[in-house]
Image 1 (cartoon, rainbow, N blue to C red):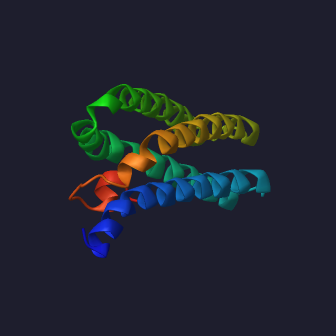
Image 2 (cartoon, rainbow, N blue to C red):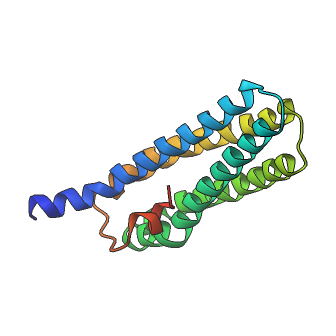
Length: 156
């Protein structure tokens, strides 16, 4: 195997870490925007942008994993199917939480309620990311998958 082939194989684990890091950062920026507490219409528009952007990015990431990454992992490592099912269940739970956050943002819920939603998402998301990384990073270092990173891990 050439160095370039090895680099490409290892890149999936690096891509996953990078995307998780960017999603953590997006959540942090969203929570900071909420904590800023600037009153008025401009602050509301900014919060809507951050919340919807974060929700879209996280949801896109999980859809890419469910539709492209996890089937490739299951084909190469059938012993990981129970792990993948657990991760998919997390995705479903997080999607439900994101839907509740979107509803709260759309009805201009008070900042305390929005932060409550974000705190719940943050807790589940972080636990999910850690478990996923523990279970899959080694596998992703050798996974051969001919697909664009955005298709596999979402558009972020």
